[in-house]
Length: 109
Length: 122
Image: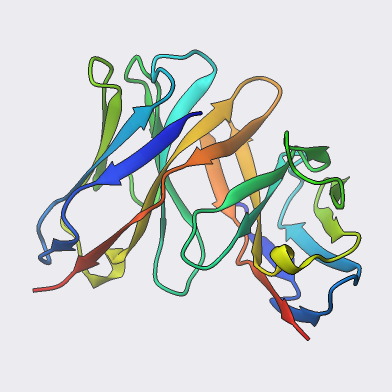
């Protein structure tokens, strides 16, 4: 099974900061990697699909990059509504299998 | 706007069967290119994919839950369901239903229900 790790597990930041989260897969997953945002008591929200594609309606301050085993998620200028937990999620097609990373909590410094 | 809504008992006894239904509104569950999925999240923990179903009844399950989970679909009522047997306290979680885009070009959960907390306890 493919294992996903995220770094850091939590971080403290201020409004306007640039925030970067790393996700690492235990084996090559090409670009089969999505990023989600989850706020307390709410369902996750898809932000980035296939490593670098912005989901419709998602602000452009969110971005993703990477392929293979190493991926990066960036918020270029943190906004008050961005304080949340972020999860990466990889997928296999044959057979279908979806695995989430452990999450990164972004809170106020 | 597509909406998903989970329903079912919030309390299940150990060794019994957990049964949840997801009602889809604002769109057809029979749309091509979409699967319908269940994901769970134990309190304070991360997300775990449970399984997925196509409107024609094709299913795929997480290997770790395959032996205990059955998904079904009811296209006439635009809903799909989860049955999980032999539950234990470890199955206590918020259960989400979600739409899964799964095509040759991308795969991701783009619409989610609000989630339902299911507690396994006697």
